[in-house]
Length: 280
Image (cartoon, rainbow, N blue to C red; front, top):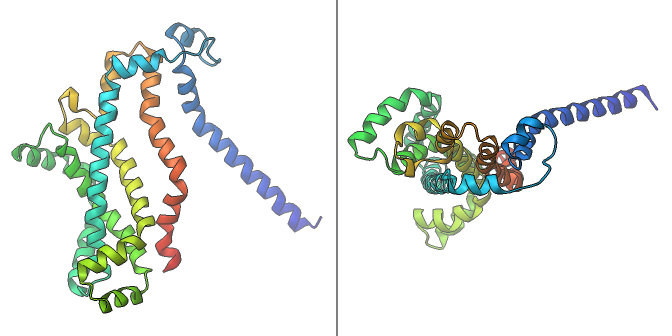
């Protein structure tokens, strides 16, 4: 075997070996928590690394009912879903106006403002947002999270959807104009069906970001019945800090839905993010 081929083969083995090690180091803490969620406190302390002697789902049922994880789970689902849907509706309309319509100077100004919004650290806006939501009587309501989530998600979403729209041929819209479609008709009947992969991608990205968000949910919601899963987890840890099995089960409730969505739809996420740059 030539030295060059031998070197390339050895490099490939080393690269894959490093990836396997990285994957193991990344997944092992999650696997340990999953394993612990089926154990009792006594078994976790006496045998933290071994498999459970008796597999039991009691920790999951206790966490779901007694610790109100089910309520927090529904709140996170509702807020993340509504905010993500509003974001992709507004972002797709804005991207169409900027990219496909003849609004040269207005489009440049809008793009510049969106780019500036991406450069502003979100943490600096927490206090002004708190005052604004309080004055609008939205504090301690799910809309106190939905509106900020939409606002923070719009800039990146507009750029991603816009990059996909730029790859579309103009002839499709010209054919629609010949058929008598106006601006809204072109957007609704021609453009939207063609950018479904991009919309799926930005929906998933926004949903995952909203699901995992903690700071605003902690600051803007103080009622227990309105808490989302990340903030509810903190309350659960403070109240049940000695129930290690229940705590592990609650962690799995917060992690598994996100992982399942990402694993099932990861190809759509990658394809949607890279589609605009590849086609353009």
